[in-house]
Length: 626
Image 1 (cartoon, rainbow, N blue to C red):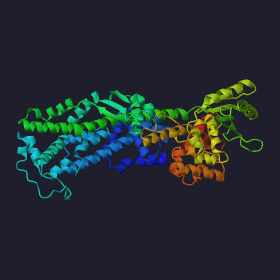
Image 2: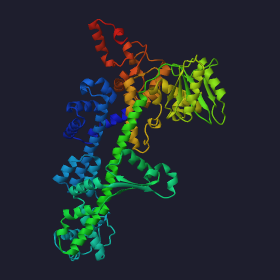
Image 3: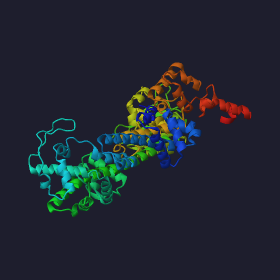
Image 4: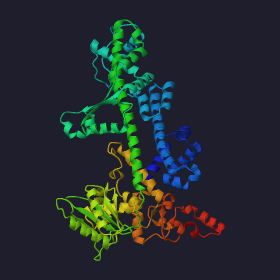
């Protein structure tokens, strides 16, 4: 699904999720406070967004409606809107479930309404989630709840509470299905009563909040090597073979490293902390220490231990680690997105003749020359200007390599040499610079280029279409040259995750990462705009309003009918409807066409206004855009 498709499907989610007008208004007010903008701005964005408008289109062409919100603010608003709508929908569902159970109280409703995260919302519902086969559910089905209630409200022993208990001949669940239970002796009956008490106590959410907060301040995360045989293969994780530090102060990058170690079965991770202070708080909360006789007190203290050790502590540990992981992933994804944006928006070298160099040792240094338009240059025999040299061990044909490169640089008047930063990059760079210094007539300059993902592109279907006559091993050199000439147009051909935008990109939520990087790519492409008569399907896909299918339709139409002479001609492209044209037209440029405005960022809907202003000011269009 394209970005536009996902935006559109998300846009209608408010109605699909059954959110009423009051709920949506509350969400808009909350987003305004959170992002430090006006509610009217949120309302304007949501209206446009729900009508299917894309963020780049709103940022560029609907500024007057959103009161000049920029693309960064709109992306933050889009993300928060989706989250809050999901939260509101889940709140509604949980409220309905609790009301149907007859357990919804004003206090619970207030908690649900004030929950700040999805994790917190699920924590509220957890004690009330139906568990038909849990020990407590079985004990209740067997009629032990009256004994549990008596023990909690009367100063009697557990045995006395069970004095009148009669084991039913058959036990059924809420659906009337017979279930297999065994409460035939006193010990099993006592265990059932205790399970019911512990289950009742789990509903003390204020206490749980207090314990979680206290445990979070003192807990440590502890890592250890999984086994002795993992010491050697997991050498990169050696800092965590016997490690402990405060969970609250654990840096994001170290947590991600620990989690990677666990994923690779090298490390074990656990959350460490005290038990006694928190069990004592449970005892005090339920006034267990003030009760008598001692047999009852011991039974309830045992229940308090079970509540903490078997129920709450594992849950608290999981939630704290999950919250920490989610925060670390969100931070990492932001870093990856920023790194990608810097790469995509790198200054292009422009229309230069470039020698692309893909360094290597055993398999040689691959080279290809591209012309000012980015096409692989052809020699006098109409063959691609490509070559492979072997200057390094084991071949050591340095002199031969230098002679051939010197000849290429001289013959084709190369302006720049783009050298990939992979294996043997430094050695190749040094060799190129020796060639340039030895021949003063050469005007080329050497530049190191990030080659991450070039091999992925080389083996892709897109590369096979674009460079069908070239071997896979040489396509990387072409991509490296194009990355220097026009970084944005070339890098959009590669999956952003293959470009190497961060150290832990494989350890975060892949859907969220892909979504974030896709939005960065879309914003970057639309910020620049593309020439619709030269653009590849890869870059057209990221234009606001377009998806992969429509992008390919544009290219197919262009091949069949020739270059577009004006933006209006885009309407003849199959599957490019009115709404799509509205969203995309301003970002699709046509150079040297019928209308000079088609080469600008002015949207066709504003042409009449521009012409009117020109007439009013007695100016020619060439004076404005020349």
